[in-house]
Length: 401
Image (cartoon, rainbow, N blue to C red; front, side, top):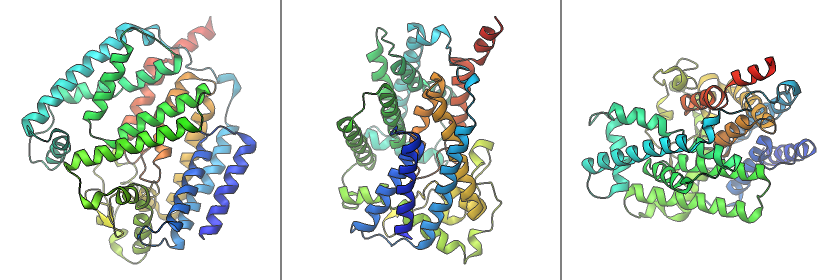
């Protein structure tokens, strides 16, 4: 099945080349990602469990509708509405808005540093993670409400940064703004937020046409450096189980055998079917408590034999709806990302949206960051872009005049 899957992925790239040769095309980037992962897994002596044929079948159940629905999204493009929501409010490029976000960022950074130091005055970066874990377990009081609201505002600071970079806006104090955004992101001690920003910058550079192999390689090295450094700092010290190779295996390869082992176990144990369908995929967006099999509890690690707690983007869809869930998930990804990608060539907010969500495609081998996690933020991102930054009403007014 490895060879068949590889042939289908390669065929997908060649077929897409006839339609679109842009490297950030969702089908192209997904195909390249899985080719690299599967070839690496099958030819590197990593010591992980071998993948069964069921994993390859599951991947094809996802990938084929993903490609088909990308082309369906292309058929849904209507030229007459390409420029909807393409006219921003004037304040979007103003120094006032930038300084507002700089003020919010500065306050949050000060509050965050004070909060962490009160929890642990030493080993600051590791304490950030330990503080978050202690709060999630209910061992200490929750985050103060003013920090929660302030953080919600700050989350959109890097979206504003994307808007300015995309448009080439050069305001006084912009480098201070970029620096505060960087500090805010690093204080989160969240590797995926770092990756989200770096992948968005990669996409924006690609749109500008000034992206070549050296820059792509540099970005990948930079992303890897931040991932590795962040993990070491969170642990507080170097440990043998997080040597460089083990780090690569854990964060790049282990999600595949983890999901494969779940497929193999779920067919023979009622433990993996005794839950309500839909509670895994839609729990975040609906504010429900996740109903997960123990095997998929994100606080626990599965050993394959290295530990991991991520199971690829296919996992939540398989948990809820089995093989039909994979077909649904692939179709959803193909339709959604195909639509906003194709719109991005004609509409600035769609370009910012695609850049902001590009990390979902890059890290699909980890987990589903479109619906299962990050869904509330993704929805709020759409609301901010299309109702506040680029309100639809302005387009309607223009057409009526």
